[in-house]
Image (cartoon, rainbow, N blue to C red):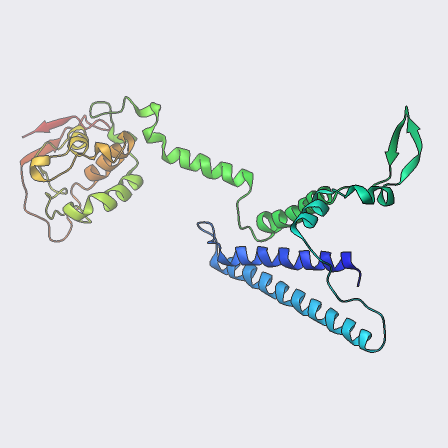
Length: 292
């Protein structure tokens, strides 16, 4: 086996070994399917095992041939760090230039063109682009490990829609301008479950906090009153101001959900607190209130 072939084989084995080790030790991106990760890692391990078996078989065959009298040099050439770097970047010692550089049969104003091979570093870059394209194809188009650009764009648009409430378009949204009709009750329910249910109950029946399903309200029962109470809180009663944790759109959504709990009659309701509130007939969408 020629020395350069053995060098190439050793380099390829070490390269694939390093890639396999990195893939096996690195943590997968968020949301990556664990089954796919297992399959990819298993494939790398199998490939490395097959490569090692192929190398071992090749060496064994060469040794057997040598034992039968064939002149085969199995010794590895001396390798030094400086020599590897020079070979990698295409540098050659001056004493070898005459033997390696072959001038072509033409020149221009005394400038001679040499018929030299491209430096190895250029070949590594070229082969690297091929390897990258294969990895890209597998990751993005075969195993779907990462989203394509159009999918990333759609995800970013969806996230931007969720963050709309914190943008400039709702800077003027407050306890005066918020409207019940603009509230997203499904989003409000999620916010309520995550932040309010611990004190007011999953169904609004009341626990530490008051019952939200009856006609009685301590700080006013209109939509705007509820918005204001959630935004600024009631520190004296243990309710924190939510304006530091929820944006105006989110407060509007959860206020709408709280208002939608009226009259739902959940089991084990807490006793009424505060004053009775009756919604005005003309308050559709605006929650203009009358208090009895």
